[in-house]
Image 1 (tube, rainbow, N blue to C red):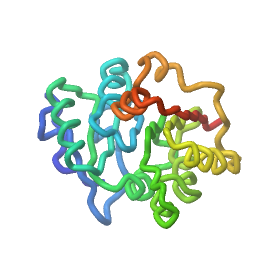
Image 2: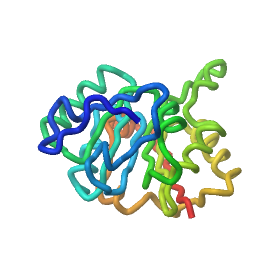
Image 3: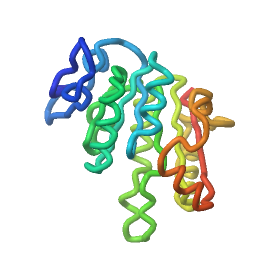
Length: 211
């Protein structure tokens, strides 16, 4: 996969944090993107980057890819990552489904974090939801053995739909609780979670592992 611009070995400057995908190119090479062979975790829909940044600071031995389509949020997140000079973070402003399907090799991801994906509550819009059978198959394919999927939503109907999809899968097993490295970050992992908790909304979480 062609990444533009190519990461610098010296530092993670503004020109190095963001990468871009190109049509008709090979699959991703994490060793080229990060210049090391550390495990890679992916957050889809990072918002302003609270979870991504806190995770990268707490676990420098892990590389993180953050994907966010909204330009306003992406710019805020990118500025925060650059300010902290986080060498283990790379950011992508593109379609997450396309990136996962087209560019991530089998078994290349140690964990997926998907917090508060758009629930598209209107019935006519539900086909736009991130979670569906095809997307879940790509998550299963790209997770490494022992890799985890951790997700949260405040929308109970969407949560139940995601659970139904996962229960129908024979490739992921439910975890009793979210992964320890996520629990250790504390409460209110994202800006959305802080907002929704303050509004009194219930937060529904799920965690699964690939055996």
